[in-house]
Image (cartoon, rainbow, N blue to C red; front, side):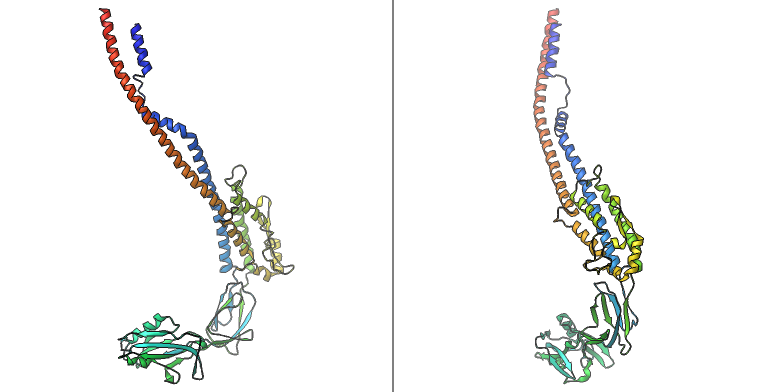
Length: 474
């Protein structure tokens, strides 16, 4: 019995029959070693992801608001659109600035391009000669051409064997301001030259034929030549705006007065037409109601994000900066050049700040401003440097400035950097954990080998002890 007990003690001491999974043990130990650090990394990464999502949502809401306001001011119900009584005289469109007032327009002449035609040819594929075709620009007065000394005279190479269509393509490809095409008339095909609008864009055509390409000379033209070939004369537009005589090299008049573009299309000598702008005052109340609702949606999101107990952005500089700006929005002067007594702030348009940072619309104050100064109210809705849109746009731009660490974009840049750092840390932890697992597995493999050897020895010893016991029993 004593010997048997000794055998059991040896087997127990050496670990025989323990059944330990050394590979699983190595994995478990490595996992346990890094569990806390991996959990901390995961928690921090989840927090940063929520913060990025929250900051991105705020930034997106703000930009959507400014975009919406900009669209309504530029082309929507807050856009003062020009109107013209006689639409046959001109097409009136809104310019960059916000227009206002009324104007009279009387057009006596339209800007026109010079138009030339070549002699008649059998067809567009007729040989046109070869060599060099030169265009000289200047002015035409009573049939006399005066070249503009400092204006280039482009030379266009016409290759050997060129047809009338080939010449037209060469002229168009040169980009001189003169276009060309082949037109088929009653007497055959003709090459048409068409310049740009304006008296200073008159032109003559000179040719230098090459050997064998003498036919190119037929395309040359000056006023002293065949006058019938000039089908249109380069001319400026002439008109009166509020009785003031004006001219233009083009029928397209950009910002002829602030907020007004005109495309002259006809004449009305002796019968001036009136131009005005639509009244946007009636749309202001609807807009302010929409703006108040949109601001409150943004504030609701912002308040939840900066809540000191549950907000993901409770200590974020960008979110705090936005909250400060929102709290000051109603009282901000958005029309610094407004005359005394005229509306200058969003508060003058009825925007009032409540406790908790939300807004309400003071319709009585808005109505009073619209009634007393409708023109000044309309002027607050412009795409210029001042006004409602400019104020919101500046706020959106400041919150989108990546270079400013105190903006939402600055917060997003910082959080994104943290996310990258945490991802790198996670990878490093995984690498270190795997390295430890491999080291433990290698060590445990040696132990397992030694235990196996011990078990073989124990098997031999048990056999010997059994034999001894049998001998002693006999």
